Image (cartoon, rainbow, N blue to C red; front, side):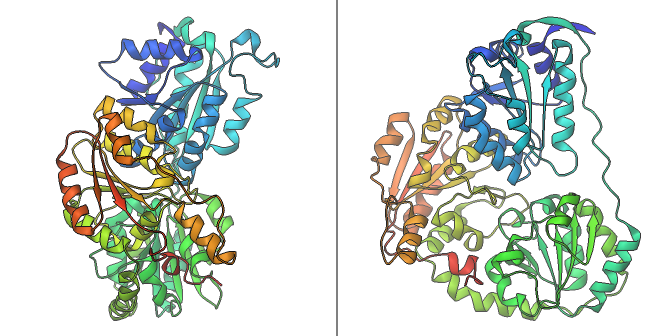
Amino acid sequence: MSRMTAGEAIVDTLIRHDVDTVFGLPGVQTYGLFDALAQRSNQIRLINARHEQGAAYMALGYAKGSGGRPGVCTVVPGPGVLNAAGALCTAYGVNAPVICLTGQVPTQYFGIGKGHLHELPDQLATLKSFLKWAGRSEHPAMAAEMVARAFQEALSGRTGPVAVETFWDHFTQEAEITPADPKPLYPVPQPDPVLIDEAVKLILSARKPMIFVGGGAVKAGPIIQALAEHLGCPVGAHRAGLGVLDADHPLAVTLAQGWPLWAETDLLIGIGTRLEGPGWRWGGLPGGRKMIRIDIDPAEMRRTRSDVSLVTDASLGAAALLQALGSNRTPNRAADIAAARAEIAPKIDAVQPHTDYLRALRKVMPADSFIMDEVCQAGFTATFSYPIHRPGGFVTLGYPGTLGAGFPIALGVKVANPDKPVVSLSGDGGFLFAGSELATAVQHGIGLVTILYNNSAYGNVQRDQRRLFSGRDHGSALRNPDFQAYAAAFGVKSWRVTSPDQLASAAADAIAEPGPTLIEVMTDINTEASPWPLLVPARP
């Protein structure tokens, strides 16, 4: 045991869990934690954001960009927690292991509702309502143990965000504390051999199976590729699953390319996915199709029922299927896949100008780079126009669709990958949600390339309004600042481009810059083609 404050115990626990970066901004309730970070600043880097949402989004990006190492953020209680809530909800949606460390009112004021600074009625219950797990350190001696438990919960099974709250006065109160090393993760369920046999029977009775992968399959790429090649079947992906199979692989299809194959698909094998693509974008699973699911989260099996539900890790499940299949195979669908790609290619070509801009960008981006999507026309189009060549290379907001999150998340991705190019795609509307974090990027030398598409509108909203309400739009037109002057005010080098060739040139120059950069792409909402017919082809 060692005599430490709760703040010192928390920082010691972070170091024991190999944390090298914390994103946050100090407030009076967490002064003791920040002083402890200062004392260990040679071991943990602090990136002080300009807003709690930015700190939490950066932690999310760090987690996704690092291949699953936890991202850690710290915010003050009450409004700080609520400011970070959008990012933490997004982390839940994309299964990012984010550790949020927050404060609480002093112990003598806790639970009596006297309106102490930043008090939030039952903050812990609020956190538990949208996180994977949340806990409270009730005594300085508990602080290390609670943080170690938070890591265990965040990283076991289906990874996700967690939080620990600590009382204001405990951060600076000493106690005899036992240091907390990493706890073992909860055991991964092994594939049920009876269910594996049932799954193999379904596979061998199928004529045209399809595998569909999501974020839960990112670490299972090689074995999924082996399974797909053994079966000769397509591997579909949307957003988080892009790159599980290299886009250049003849069996890989995006959501757009997979749609022509769907009508004749008689068996779906979902691996680590909510099945958003087949489940509703393609119109669901009627018509006698069979389904096998592999997912580590048993709750997923209740949300979308299947004929065989394998609750296990993606790699273990796919490996068990491949082994049980032996030499048995299904008819190869390579010709079907090539035909589907050819059918969709002209439709992808027609999504202009964004397809051409994204293709120009892809030509100058290395294979090991990252691209971050956003709730904007370019972000939607990137899911089928920007080939991804490795797992995790496409970082996404997922189903939460938190407008404005892409830029700060991408900052976190870049912090985790200082030697790899990282590009953020942003619309002019969403970018200003967290545009002030350009200051953070400059202060800490975060060399993110931000591509900002400027059409003076919440483009997706405006198009929908006009389509659905007799050409009327309301509240979706924007008056923007001069983004070149905006970038210059932060000391950020920037470009304004009007063609794909200009974008490619500017992106190549931006990648070579040591600090953050911004490329403004001028577009016109009135001439932009909608990507949605390719994203929801079954829309009524």
